[in-house]
Length: 268
Image 1 (tube, rainbow, N blue to C red):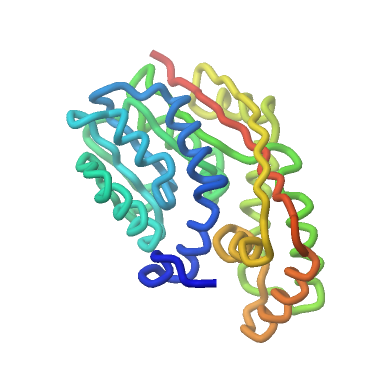
Image 2: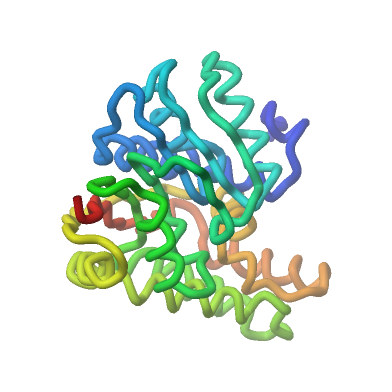
């Protein structure tokens, strides 16, 4: 298969992540930005923005008088997001790899966006409350996370493929993030969580989303997401896992990406 343009510039992890953009990250980023009801001139904070799936529509919504601060720990993903913004002549975005937990500005935000990012917090309660603290009174957060049962079959096939190899150092990170996902994995859980951690109102919608995968794209899902933390440290072992995993996936596998989109507001 010929290399895509981004593969000539960006490292494999970012390229693997971006392969999911058309089918998953972009439609969900648009859904989250739309749910936020961003107005002209708004100040927006987009945390764990990835390659810009929600950043770009947010910048289009705020117009030339607004501002979008886009944070992600991956400089490679921010380079992808910046390239998209430059191609669309969007000049109101500020990209930064600064830690979300330490981010501070003099002026609070009107809107916070967080697409699948809550799971990354080592302290989920403190992280959620910290996002509420970034908002002005009556400000709102719009976010997405995984619904109960999302990618369960995919995860099981990967764990089966990894089971005969020595675990790598990333397994605790995977377990922490999946525990966070499980804590939020229903409309009731997510709504109650937001109400208990800094927000005064919360509404949640469930969005079914299926992502057809071929063998190459299925392996990109592994390398470009939290699933990479399940892989062993030894490169030869990774290749063995890859062979077993793509054989298990086969042709015509559909990733269950069922998701939740929530909008919550701080007290006015």
